Length: 275
Image 1 (tube, rainbow, N blue to C red):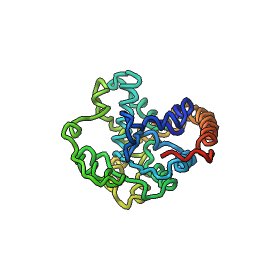
Image 2 (tube, rainbow, N blue to C red):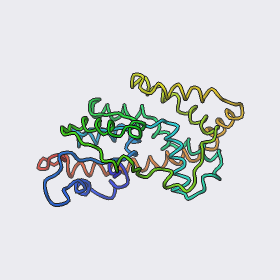
Image 3 (cartoon, one colour):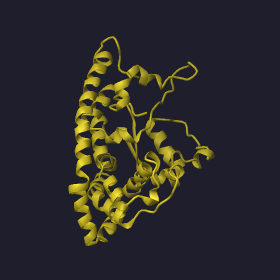
Image 4 (cartoon, rainbow, N blue to C red):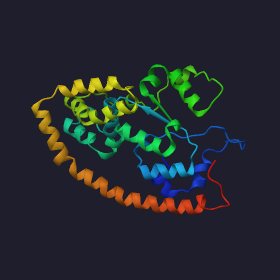
């Protein structure tokens, strides 16, 4: 839904948000309700702490995808779907600039995301699983989620859901394209250190990612290293500066909006926190 500390929060209040979880037939609320959004992984620590102050009993589910696969899928989505371009004609340089975009880097730094949310809600509130399990063994994935949210009744995942992909990149992007070798190397080089930190945090659960990315990073060429420096120090700088300037203003607006919501809903002694 992308509400907390997103543009929708500037346009709507907490009553609007809470109404999305009401029973459709006017009956009692479901005992477990939630929303899903990958964008929440980019939130800053102060923003997540504010969410925790309002909804301290949330159960957080984080599904991690192989970083190279995630970045490449996002790049194809950006160019092929959102911009309507033929991804077969997009240059490698354009893909490399996409990798350097701040929102891409934030979405790829799983270690940062885990630390921010676990610090705000406590480690036990987080359930961390993997996209590979969702794809290869969806029933086991669902069982893990159900245990985490406190569901006591087993639920057999319907076959139709096992075979249905929602917003799969290859279904909404007109053309397919294999990742260029230089782009794969660039992503591995850019994200290896964050993945190593993630592997340490998760006590070796993504060691295969680390090994694979080290292997890819080792297949370097002088021209690629030069291209890396040019992209990071020149080509990507204007967009990075624009992003930072934009978010300084946006964060201020979000902070002021939160203070307004807090005064209206949280600080009012006659009104309890959201259920």
